[in-house]
Length: 267
Image (cartoon, rainbow, N blue to C red; front, side, top):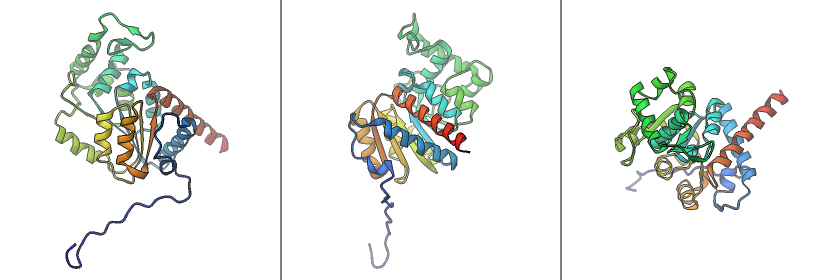
């Protein structure tokens, strides 16, 4: 500060009513927390954001597909609970592989066993999309008929895929320039009201570093260290859950269905 000139900092207001789950429970990331109550509260936050046209961001990793949770994310997309998805090449590739071949990195997700020559399926999936000219064109041509990427195209959900040095392919839509990817993330997260970060350490941390402090953020991961790192960055507007992605997504979608059903009954 020089003379009478300076920068005035106005801290974000903390709720004092004791009803904001994102402020009450952000300090405990133990895997032994009562998750059912928290997931119901998260579902209410998502429903409120959807009703008020608040922008909902999902940052998801390939584990969403590997754990069998993709169908629940598709339900959320079709239900209007997702406005923006930020992820990497892997989520899109394994989702498309699952849609085309029923496998994710060669593992059959229905029978829980390896598929013959399945280790090549993700490369086949990439080639199918590249031959079509991209994910959207593969959907339009009827080549891609289900899955997360299909739902994003059909519901016009904004999708940003950012690459890394280890990517196979990558898919045509993947932004491989890290500086350009960071610029696009900053641009797209404007007006985000609620962010759900799950199953990806690198993309979750990258996005969390850029999110404004007033955005309600939920971090879900099986690794407590990842959850701790993410919630530490967002201080009192973040909530962390240490759990597997599939049971979390399954219960969350059930809670969302219940909320919408109850809303119809009360009319």
